[in-house]
Amino acid sequence: MNSKVLRFANVAAIIATIVINALANILPINGLDTGTISDSFPVRFVPAGYVFSIWGLIYLGLSAFAVYQALPKQANNPAIAKIGWWFVASCGFNSAWIFAWHYLQFPLTIVLIIGLLVSLIMIYRQLSSVRAEASTADRWLIHTPFSIYLGWATVATIANATIVLYDAGWRGGPLSDSVWTVILLVIGVCLAAFITLRQRDIAYNGVLLWAFIGIAVKQAAFPLVMNAAIVAAVAIALLIGLALIRSLPTQRRKAMA
Image 1 (spheres, rainbow, N blue to C red):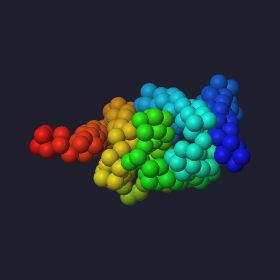
Image 2: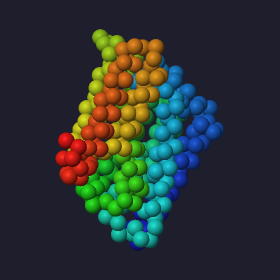
Image 3: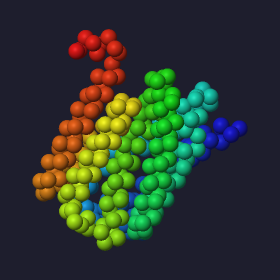
């Protein structure tokens, strides 16, 4: 019975999240567009507008997960059991963040997005223990969607933090905005390297690559940021290549050496 309740809650949670996110820009909530609010802050760790289209991929993947986990054959799937109620929690943080953002409650947004990030980290950690035994369906419909979501939440949390600090009046002194952005990009590459060494997760790194290319495009008027973003993107592309090589069977790796 508890499993059935959880599976229903997962479906209801993603439907509610998608509806709230859609209405945020259709209405829009509080008369403000999500992207317009972000663009009102002159922070550098923000990618070009097209990069945010990744939300379509994220919600497609999460919807596929919700349908998959609701199938009777998945009632005893250990990967789904590992996730537990963390997915419902992540949807709650996501939806609450939308309202806080649109009503310009920026200190609250950082609390909520950290809650979202922690929820996704918990899901990722739980799934890590069953990743090696995952079926093809589990890899594409459970592991990959959450890797993509966690990758984007990582980028979004950093961006959200820079906006909250700017709104609070902090301008980065004694360092400039551009220098701080370079530091944040370095942190992003370090996270990608950590994930590569621990999980060989191509999907997670692919999201960071997508975001950093977008930052280079958006911040073309600031050479230091643009060049750093390009270098960071190249570094992550190399990490993705490393992850691909490490994912190959031992025999094929030896043949390539």
